[in-house]
Length: 179
Image (cartoon, rainbow, N blue to C red; front, side, top):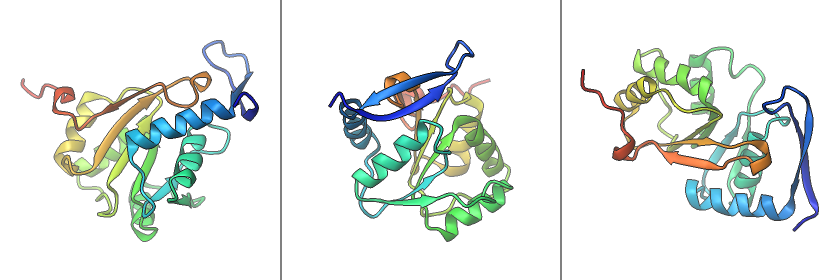
């Protein structure tokens, strides 16, 4: 369990590059915990959005393959525009998206303005790297509803990808929409 599973370089909060070593035990615990939290199934098709030098790729690859699901590799031009991204997700029958929060903010806005439609195949969206803006969460709920799970995650690379996760469909976490 202590043997090295992977090494990622990060600048962290210092701005100085450093290597983060993650052992097999930590990776196995992460995959088990994330699997229980996100619930990937064998029939799922998970988009690998993150480049390999970001720790989110570890979540996308290992969690997907360890659950027996299919890893769908992002096409190079897939993020040229949000309509193109959504169309590609539809064509590829993606069921789970794992996106940077900043990209999801743009997606939530586009969906709320009618600039695109979330594919009907998508049932879970995991966002990470920063907190979701309450205004974008409200827009998301109005455009998508609560039938698509929305999970906001965060964690330093040293914590093996994710240290915290919140299900944003939980009514207790709903932003206050009153004026």
